[in-house]
Length: 418
Image (cartoon, rainbow, N blue to C red):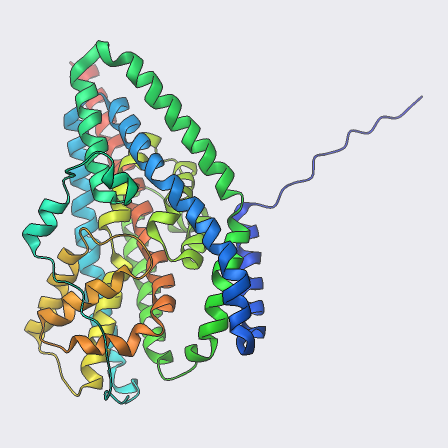
């Protein structure tokens, strides 16, 4: 009698595990290559750039078609408005909390900041954009330009307008709806193919950063970085845990475990928009419907900047200390308001926080040249603040999903009692 043994398929390591291993290897390789950082920059970073380019390539079509598909699936413009309104209010409130946390901890650690020389500082001031210009720039004047320039706010507006129009046209638009859904599936599949390369991308993006900045982490700016990262952790543990449990009906442990792949990728890439595809995948696995993630997450990647807001508060206090300036309470309130409002329209790409910081410093009369003090390690700040930004987006998607589910049950209950 022949015995046939069925071979059990080998269990594949989850993406989070692969990314974490890549992260550790990148740290080790980066530290080893510190004296030869030019090798890491010249021969390793290009592969990371290729991966990030692929991610950026897929983001615009994913956002455009997923939002259109999500809006169409709701079949109700009022429902879209309710979801969008809830998301914007949540994003603005958490950003205000984040700035406040940044200011509180920065003031607590202020005496430990090193005294740095402020002579010879130079920083090219970005062009100021007025509030009304920001509003005007949300709306596209061309169909192609927002997509070619990856202007996410304009892409979102385009997707919403087209989605609303399809709902209003009604049955005649059914062939178009089918095509949009098919294209959405195609781009999601392309996204899945690209995400399989995440561990390689993480290693190639992070290794050169460590090789270039490893020594600076333990240098004069180490305490400022530590302050910012303490704030990132406090905001995530306190604010997101509380809101996810109270408003999202989910345990914080389950939330952070499910978000681990996206958080690790965000930490390595320092790009909210670049992490968007993986963020959508993680939140949907946690139970958020695609119709909500496809709308709330792209919106959050564009306007939700909790990590960046913390960075503003910490850096404003640090720069003020270096110049021997003590900020007053009204000035700190101004920082909270400016950072919260400036977060709208700030692109979710590496380095966008520098532009916001210039706005914040100007709002309280601090020298913009002071940005040069933190510019050298901005990438290290950026990795943490991006991770917090995308985690906030995910918490919002799950909270909105839970609230919508509760409203639907309440309506069903009221309907059945009639």
